[in-house]
Length: 178
Image (cartoon, rainbow, N blue to C red; front, side):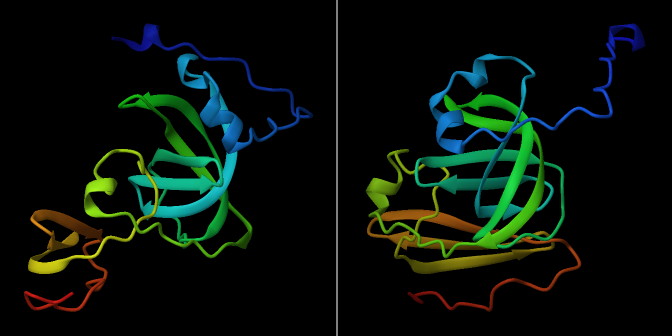
């Protein structure tokens, strides 16, 4: 790899219109992930946001995982427009190098309540879920608060990421807390 491997594309004319957003339902049902380095715009409602890492948006048709370096403030339920390069991650449509812009409006997001076994099937990939569990233990790190939970005979982690200088997102939960 060297500087000679870099190709610069011509800029769009100053009077060019931005690309029209593709409906999330259309994007998820399309073959856009097969078109390398094809940039698209879509919109949806935020269901997960880990600043500088991940963003997940959804609509009635499904959800989209977006890798982003952006660290702007966002809230669950906020509407956003996202621009990035569509790809496939583990066989599921996703987006790389995502950049988002908040849009007016928000929606109340109601998490789905599957059993632990149903949640592990992959059917709910990138969907907001609620799973009942009992606290086994917890760990506090500079960048995250991690709860180890048990649901039936299965143990899993709930990770709440944070910036090093932010306060802990959760109080202490003693073992056995539901």
